[in-house]
Length: 326
Image 1 (spheres, rainbow, N blue to C red):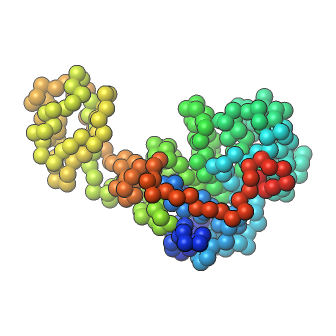
Image 2 (image 1 turned 60 degrees about the vertical axis):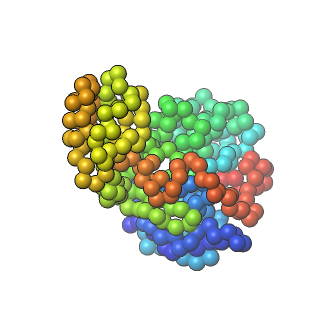
């Protein structure tokens, strides 16, 4: 069982959003779907949900074309706010679940349980417009999982959350994975992907530029890093005497040093000791996902100098009564 994206193509006029996009999401994993703004992530999710139709290609879940699957197969957490602002939290959670065929009494019990799990039980009888952005994000998360979907698609799920609630949401997503769910999320927080995802796909201009198991991608990158902490020496001037070594990411507490192929990491440690530096930490590490992303895309995930938002015909207006905001 897996989620397969097969040769997806989608254009909006002269803008090519997806250009033969192909990758596979293993079942029962948390999968990182990465790319700069405008790369095609949201378009792919909307095709899976049936909101958009692909020009060519298909998405398959457990051997079945997703166009033949019921809508409740999916849980979807959009990046945009999608709550009715003047509706009570508990009422709209029950309403959204009922749209997926969940009986209202069952939905209410499940909603109250989820509010407790995400530590927001006191919000049940408050209006969405009274909530902080972080708490609105929690409510949207609950609405995405309340009907117990086997696949959960999340577009920037950590937006608006403080560090405490980021940790809480991470814990929740790991529990869903352990219950057998398949989770796909996009984010610009590379450290979160490294902490949670076994496999990833990085896309650029509608194509996969690198994908597969994260550990394998790192080891095949050809990069080697040394992480070093040197007391009272933040500039590491002695590093100039190590051919093939250069500072990749300076830091007050810890500095990352990139090594050319063939450069012995022990040469860095030897040079530090020879210079009389007091080394408190020395570690040979795989490259960070952020650096791999930059290698393949040419810029950080948070900034795309060529970004042009892709228009979505008849997109719902967030919070407007009578429109589809589920």
